[in-house]
Image 1: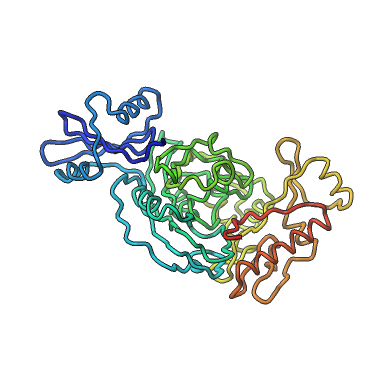
Image 2 (image 1 turned 45 degrees about the vertical axis):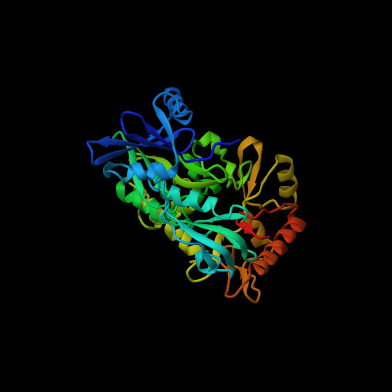
Length: 435
């Protein structure tokens, strides 16, 4: 039988308290005199620390098992006077209220398609997440961040967690490289601009991408030659069934093109609560894309370009091509750029010599989905409530009152037409909910 977290322990003869949050995570309350606590958060990164956590779990030595009620009675005897906590890492207790019933989801997603959730709770800490996971466990669960990469096809008949874990904490700084952890509920663009304000560089090509920090590794978001995986350090997530907090490095995340473990082998098993990045003051600039080079040249920034200037160029390019979700509902690029074999590419290019393409790993070829859709005649296509953006064929838009079903019907028509004309199967990048 799986261990359910958190687990509570005390230390005989020392009044020390522990909350074991997962196989490698422990928060320790260390007494200072008769009235004060110092709180320390531990991650068992090596075997001796892992063994220590294992022994705590097994109640070996002076460790004693406590119920949550017993632990709370002990911890309330003193006041916390010193603590350095990562964003949202509050192991216990939760401070959430009741579930919100029939919550409107349209205003919480960038597509704006009308839908409701049977139950929704705002979660700001790990403890809130665990409370929500244990409440009504028989109902399906969905986590909503910035709502920028989802299309709601119908009402959600289950529980929804609105991720609002916020905060930024610098963990290490050697004068050049910085390791910093960010709450999953932070705005992605807001975080990118904060990093530039601090002189922590490396994410500038990803400016103005909508959504939340927690969603960024799930999708391995990318733009203009940079992907999240390039600056990713680790993330922490809570297991939906056991409540265990675990850390995932890049290898365990199994990043791919707009893909990761969290969309594949372990889909819907984890709730990401924070993400750590490795940035650098001297991070090399990534300006190889022609659009960036042209924009920098127009602004006279082609000599002595700074990271902030690259971000400004990227934002200008994105604003010139992509509609503002506050004005016109959309989820950015609706389709992935298809990656095909060399043999399949040769068949396409034989019939369409001008097809836009790029080299991809393992001898494959990446095609520009926007070019395929544009050449197929869909750019600017409009139906009663939805359509294809007139400046970017990758973007489907809600002109007002569109349902998820209507937008999806348009997407299917585009996919079928591109397949018929080019022999290439497009895949949606946007998550389809309730399809």
